[in-house]
Image (cartoon, one colour):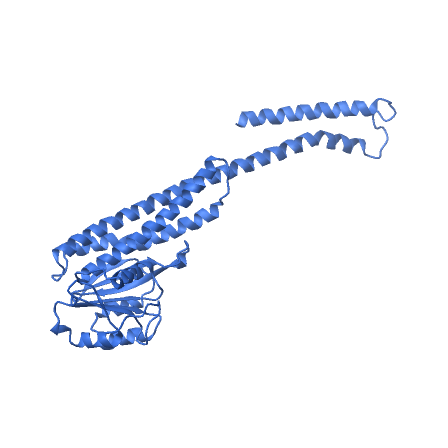
Length: 341
C-alpha cells in the first residue's frame, strides 16, 4: 500500500484517494493506490469485516472506465452521473445506497456556479464517491480520514460526509448573516451603502442552495423508515441525528432569505422616498420659475402696447408682480405637499 496523493488531482485511473478500513486495530483508514484497491476488490469476500472508500475525479475520463472494469456498481449509479445537476436524493438499488449530494466549492463566493454535485454508492463493503470539482464536504472527510480519525462502518463514512456538509453550510449561513447584519446597521444609521442588486444576488444563491439541498432530509427520513439490513442500529440513529441537524441548517437558511427580502423592501422604500423628495424639489423649482418665465415671455414680445414700457417705475412693478405670483405659487405647492403627506 502506498500513500494516497495529497493534491486535488487524480492518478491515471482517476482515483483521488483510497482508504481501507477494518484492518487497523484502532479503526483508522489505511491509504490505498489504484493497484492495491483493485487487488482488494478482487478478494473482497475474503475480508468480510473490512470496507473500502475510493474517491474519484470524474474530470478524468479514465475514472468511469476503471469503475466499470473493477467494480459491480448498480447501473443507477452510472445513470445518475450523466443526469446533470439534480436535487439531492438518496435511494436504494440492489441493496446499495445511491446518493446524489450537492455541495459547495472550496473557494465559495456566493455565486451559483460555486455549487456542484457529489455522487456516492454505498454498500456494506464498498463506498465509491465521485465529483467533477473539488468540494468542501468530501475533502473535509478526506482530511479527517488522512489525519487518523477512526471510521466504524461505511454508513458512518456517509454520516461524517453529511455532517461535514452541514458544517460547511453553517459557515456559509454565518457569513451571510454577518453581511446582512452590517447592512441592517447601515440602514439604521441612515447610511445606504448597499444596492438591492447585491442583496438580490445573495438571496438567489441561498434560494438555489436551499432548492438543491432541501430534499436531503426527507430522502434520508424515507430511507430510515426501511434501512438496508447491513445498516447497524447505531449508524441508523446517528444518521437520524445528522438529518435533524441538516434540517435546522435549512431552516436557518430559509429565515435568512426572508430577512434579506425584508431588507430589500426597506431599501426599495428608502429609494422611493428619496426619489419622491427629488421630484418634489424639482416640482417646486419649476413652479417658482413659472411666473417669471410667463411674464418675461409676454414682456419680451416685439409688439406695441406693452404695458409699463414708458413708466419709470415699470421695472419694479413687474418685479413686485413676479414676486407676488411666485409666493402664491410656492404657497400652493407646499400646501398641496402637506395635504398629500
